[in-house]
Amino acid sequence: WIMVFGGVERETGRCFLVVVPDRSEATLLALIKQWILPGTIIYSDCWKSYHNIKNYNDMTVNHDQFYNDPITGAHTNTVEGSYHY
Image (tube, rainbow, N blue to C red; front, side):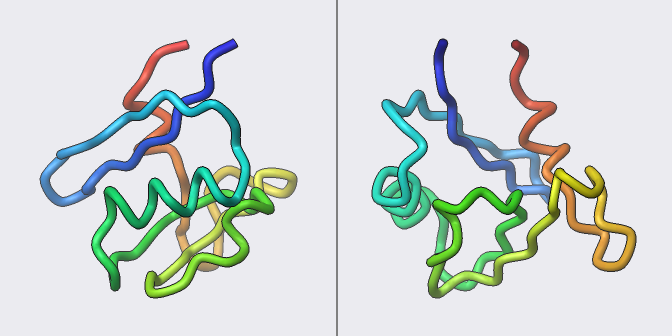
């Protein structure tokens, strides 16, 4: 089982994908700081490790309810579609 964290710049399609040892808050927040500029809009699911994102505009989608938030339009389909299982 390989875990991957990544991001896609929606306007340009530029992306990054990083194999991660775990999905802990410390691991994921360090990667956000390393790869994503402060002030950037981050679209994420409601995974608990993202709850303390600071210096970013976090838009979330609760995958227990839907995959595309009908009110905000937030979704994670862009990054999830950038890699194959």
